Length: 89
Image (cartoon, rainbow, N blue to C red; front, side, top):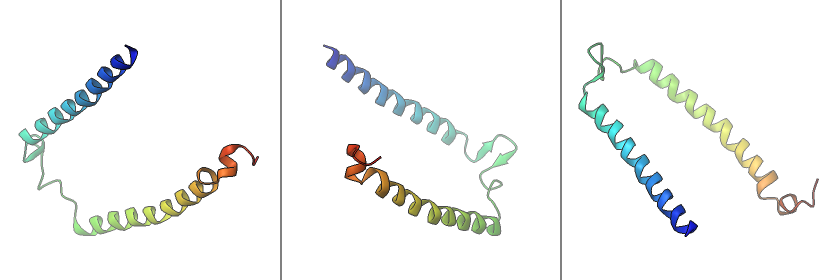
């Protein structure tokens, strides 16, 4: 019985979350082209090309730093079977 209750709860949780997301998405779409009515439109909120390139370069640099560090952490701790079993201290 508890298993059935957990399934029902999980189903309602997942689908309820999707419904809320769709409502927010629909609310945003209904106000296009305004992002902040009447002050800011989609076209007025676009960044200039130099700043856009700088943001993309910063994102790529951060990604290049993040991925190897995550791979190292995973190899050291998660994929090291002796460490996971508790044999290494």
